[in-house]
Image (cartoon, rainbow, N blue to C red; front, side, top):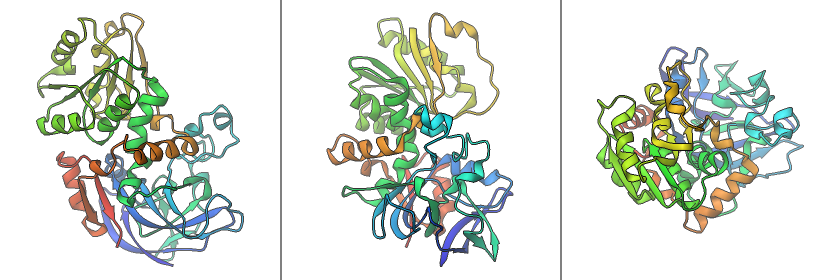
Length: 367
């Protein structure tokens, strides 16, 4: 079947093109995408050397299923999960389904194994890959069954689609990775989409003090709406946020917070959460910095822990339903996070608005 999709060219740009999505094999599902989140990772993917159908946050309706598919059927509303587990490799058996050695495009020895069958998606008659093996910036996507999670509550597709990366990464980093406890103090560096979900995760976990740090006053106001109890307006000139860290210590009995989460994706701030926490506190690098940085080991004194979780240690069959139920009960804000929606053809504007800090979250709506 024909579909419209945003296709990267392998040279830093993209275009909206017509692709062909073929019938599913036995373990595959065809999803009619209704909405796709716009993420910094999508923008970074423009520099990937191979052309691909873009997007990795998606929500839609099952259009067709393969003969062996049992978890969903035609007409079901679903979320797409990019960290696709196989269920039987070493990491999956250990419970680290987000680190699957077979299917996860980030950690697999052969990332292509998580994709739908070769030739399942074509451009001008030639096979083309899909971002993170799902490619959600398309009106139709062909994916493995393991990438699909049923949605059994009433939720707009625009709100559901963002669960598949930004919400899961922020919320899971608090709940699954750091395991924030009630009554604790939390610092969140950067209050974009991921940072706001760290704040939500801390609020839901019962943190007593949640301090949001940002250079943007408007974002700090938004952080308060999502659960921040205190804010610190940082200065761009504050190297490693050391000045801000002194303010944080004054706000936390002179010793620092119990937990600090880096959500800026700025490599120079990779060590900044260590300066915000008390002795024996926990620093969490949430934003996925993948650059070489220099760290003053004095920041680790004493007994501090620094962790770098992937995707909030997501177990999609457990975490996605939990997030959906928190939304249903009104405890997790998702509708409020979607600042603006765009047609697929306005992806360039969506990227511009994201990079300028205009949106908490922008979402593409497929028409």
